[in-house]
Each structure stands twice: as C-alpha cells, then as structure tokens.
Image 1 (cartoon, rainbow, N blue to C red):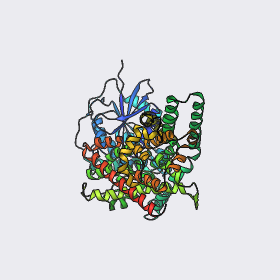
Image 2 (cartoon, rainbow, N blue to C red):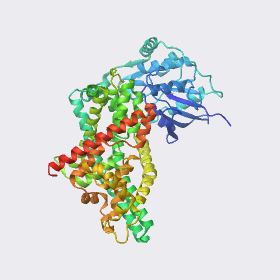
Image 3 (cartoon, rainbow, N blue to C red):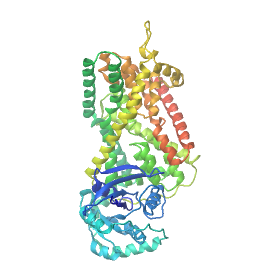
Image 4 (cartoon, rainbow, N blue to C red):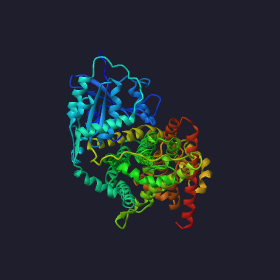
Length: 615
C-alpha cells in the first residue's frame, strides 16, 4: 500500500491559514487534540493534481520556532517530528499575508534552512491589491529560492497552482527529520526587509479607508462605545431574530406530543416519551436558533479582523484588573463555550495571566446558559419595547454584562492574591479588515449545530431519562393527596437539599434541577421541563415550560435563579479541561468553590432585595 504524505500548513497568526485549510479540505476534515496535550489538531485530506492524496494538518499560528506558548510549542514539535503518534512531515506550506509581507516573510526564512520541502502561499493578494500593494511573486520566488504561489483562500483562488507546486515537491520517500539550530532573528528580519524592498511597491492610497475605520474603532471614546453597541445589538438579535424559528420548533414538538398522545395508550411509555424525552430534550433544542445567532456574530467578528481591535480596546480596562488585552479574546470566546475559551488561553505568554484567565472564563455567559436565561426571561419579563429596544433583550444584555463585571472583579481579586505577579506588556499584530467568508461561517455554524444536537442526543437525553425515572418512581400510594412527584426519589432528593437553598428562595423543584445541571448547564432547563410536565395535566402541557414556571414561581425566585446562573459553578466538562490545562486538581476545585459561593451570595442578595422591594 502506498504511503500517504503529510503536509503541514504553518504561518503567523492572521495569515489566513484556517481559511486556506477549509478551502483545500472542505468537509474532509477532522478536529481533535494532539496526543498528550490539549492543543487542537485540525487535519483533512487533500487531493493532489497527480492523483495522490495527502494528509493536511493546520498547525497553530506562530511567529518563530522559538515558542512562547503551548500552541507555538506544538507547531515547533510537529515540524521537528517530536510529537508521539504523529507521522513526520513530507512538506510544509508556509502561509504569509501579502499585506504584511515584511513581518511574515521572516518566519519563512527561518523555516528554509530546515531542509523540508517548502512551498510559500502568498495569501490575501486581493487585499494587497486593494491596499495598493503590488508584489512580484516570480522575483520573490527567485530571491528566496522557494516556489511562491499567489492565493486568495476565501475565494479559492490559486488552489490548483498550490497543489501542483506541492506535487512537484513531495517525493516518494519522506525527507530526513530537520535538526533544530539557533537562528539570528534580527538578521532574518533585516533580510526580510531587504527582500520586501526589492519585490514590493505600494502607493498607500487605498489604505486610507481602513485607517479611517480604525480612527473610529480604536478611538479611546468612540471605540468602546462602538464595541458596546455591537455587543448590545448582538444580544437584541439573539431574542428578536430567533423568535420565529423557535416558535416553529416549539410547534413541531407540541404537535408530535399530541400525535403520540392519540396513538399510544396512557402509561409508562407515553410518559417517558412525552414527559421525559420530548418535554426535557425539547426544552433545550428549542434554543438552537439563539445559539446559532450568537455564534454567527462571534465568527463574523473574528473573521472581519474586528476581534483583535476589541482586544486592544479592552487592554486599558483589563490592565486595571491585572491582565492585558490578550486575555480578552479567550474571554470573548467563552461566550460561546468556556472550554474553547480556556483552551485559547494557551496564546497568553504569562503563566499567571493564563491561570487567571482560565479561572474567570466560566463567568462569561456561555451558550449553555442561554436556554436558562431565555426560558426565565420569557416567563417573567414582558415582551414589550423600552423606547427602540426590546425589554427582554435589555435584560439579557444586563445578565451578560453582570457576568463580565463579575469576571473583572474576580480577576482583580485573583491577581492580588493567588495569582499575584507582574503583568507583561501587550503586543499583538493587527489583522487587516476583510469581509467574513460565507463558507467558513457556514462550516463553523454547521459544526456548532452538530455539536449541540449531539449533546442534546447524548448527555441531555440520558440525563432526561434518568430524571424522568427519578421523578416517576416510586408511584404515590393509593391514599396519597400530594402531587405524585413528592413521593418520588426526585422529590426526596429535593426535600433533602431544600434547606440549603431555601434561604435564597429556591424550591425543591429548582434544587432538583441544579444537581443534573452540573453535567451541562442546559440540563437544568431539561430537568425543569420534565419535573413540571409530570406535575401537570395534559391541558397545562400545551402551555409549555414558560407558562408553567410563570404559574409556579414568584418573581423574586425567578430573579434569584437568573442571578445564580450568572455565577453558577461550571459543568463537569469545564472542570475536566481546567484540570488538563493546569495539570492539577487544585485549580478546578478552587474554581468550583469560589463560583459556588459567588452564585449563592448573588442569588440570596437578589432574592431578599426583590422581596424587600415588594416584587
């Protein structure tokens, strides 16, 4: 059987590697972790023009072969064949940004002496042309002694030429492993500047519009206001744009429940499907449109180049709590999920900054909390406008803002106690503005939807069935005069834990929902859906969970429940990834403990203040 060559994509951050990887591999890609580390590994299959197929690996972005973070260390080790279980490389594609040739070319010059077959992808040539930059690719190839292919990854330009260059460079036998050698980075940078001067011309006139945008986006006053407006619009859209598709999903689930009620006799099976699976899992799946809208905004901000500007804007604020702007991107990623946010901290140079960011990342309101917020807001906050804005969107924005402020307060306290130390200066390359690529956004949203539905069909489904069983057995006695659930195991568990949570306004149904919520936060909604479905009659089921909560909870309890989830202890998966990233159980235990205490205090204060205010 013929050997499958291995090709790695390498380059500086913001060079367009991921877009090129997506363009070359399409749906033929897999995402996992490198053996023994938590750095993400993206691999796909690439068909070469000569009929051969190679494995393409997208290595983490790096500025040199001297690593400053775990991500950069993985790139170095992969190039030198030091990762256990990974095959050595047959060739490298160095992706460089044509609009920033001088800085990106230095890394290519550092790679060249390694002796591995090397092809240079001169990416984003369309943006260079827009900026008035003209690069003589043939002269560049002659000066560095390497094949240079012009590409526009987001438009799939230059892919065939890149494939031909690779096919010509990859031999039938793997090359010898490179040997690490010290590089004079200053000399390489000087050489890169000289080469750029020989191959690049620029009028600079086309850059004015980008500079005009930055004059507003990075302005010390207008910049933060613009960022706040973007985030505010995002949270308004999460509610308003998702309303129609959520209604379709709810109607579909209700229709399916009604159909099953007619087809199946009353009994255990019907209760399991309608009250357990559909009422529980359905209560979570209905929020898929809101989660996808949130992710669409985050992906668009990343791809447009604005995310890095937001990090620069936040650097001044982050510095006041002992961090720098580099922590902002992992924290913003944690709005989607704390797990990739925590993994993204590997780009932070300072170990103390990195640890602090890991510990506060769960305070960012992840997408798993969105179903919790949405169902409680839908039940207790009127769907009316306050001026030009929706009240429900305003409340959601306030909850996200509370999480951000909580994270800043926690960072301030941590940096002066358990992670005390000096913060390093903030340096980050500013990417060019560009339109988000529709294909990359579609792939990102497809991956998120698939992951969410897989989670709903595994963790949440299993939890729901267990919850239904606990809430259904044992059956009430013949002379029982209380709701059936109070005789069940779930009722006993809720009664046992209720004294702990009664001071903050939680009833036993809420207490019962909090326990499985540790598996995944959205399971709390599933648990409430199951518990209240089993308590009601068929006519009440038609109103859904929102109407059931509105009838069962006083407003102070609902507000306390929201406050709890602003600070709620993170899910088991987040604790596990924190354990892997910190190589210790000490920090996950510390994280759980301080977040539990914060959630308890916040919920208690909210409840008693609401009661005192007569709500």
